[in-house]
Length: 196
Length: 245
Image (cartoon, rainbow over all chains, first blue to last red; front, side):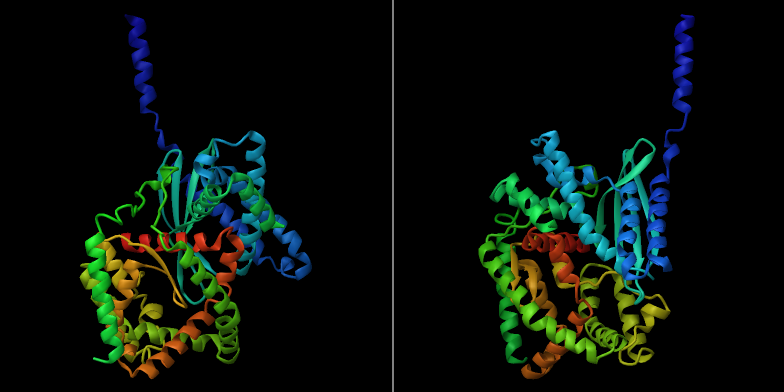
């Protein structure tokens, strides 16, 4: 009887411990990464063309700290992901990651004097959505949302939504279509050719 | 009413009746993703594309047209006309199409947005010198974030995309949005000029617009495995987002 009371008390107090201690973490962590990227882009010693390789390397490091490329690849393949072997999955993540880095790093490098406004954040563990707006020099506003997933203490980006267009959904549409009309192997082949 | 507008009206009525008649049957599979779709892995925004083989041909045609004609012209134009001036021209065209946006705001019950559009028009036409300068938006931060059009209005009434269509020169659209473009055309003052003047003004508008977006299509193509599908999906996602707003 006494034992039961103690267990009850312990359980009761356990429930009082606030569970939402992670609140606002996703936005904070995303901000740190975005700030680091902007800092690299603004560094005067990296502006010359012969420093391009170094700049890309630094950008790649900063971005891979915050982005979960495996989660992106998994979602882009949707139900076809489960059918792949561990080796195939690993290979696919690497190919997809290279494609994204190739095409998006070049685009990021074009941005420099844009302002970023952090608008809103929604957290539904283990997921979060951070809404931002990029304001260009011509004061054009481009909404960019980030979807994040919690990995222990870190929040990792697994999708970027530019003007309402989800990157992962866009690739999923293409991947599924290619697999449907030919095969997974030909998808991998096309990915390889693309990043060559 | 000018001759080409009668044709427009005819097409508008035709597609409208078509969409309304077939809305619930043929096009019911038009799914808009749920608000919490980021929690769900399998949600996909789709559009019916029975014309795919034909659409892909038009897509190819537009691709060639862009690289062989539109891009070189826009590039040459951008070398002659300074960027600020091109933005001014773009502002001018945005300003004169205010009837389109006001009417569609009202049709969607967005009274405040309609007011902001109307006030911006007055301010930009006077203080912004015939709308060349976006005085209201830049200095007073008076701006409607989202340009409303008839395609969005019809969409907000619950009518789906119908089918995906790629038009020569104009690019990606759907049956619903085509209907929207036709309807909006009646509120665009440029269409009330004589036909040859309309075509000339449209060419300038088009070249000017392209010159401000050079490189975007190329970037998109570089990142896509199947550019046709990538653009189709981006178009549908983008329009759905605008309709939901």
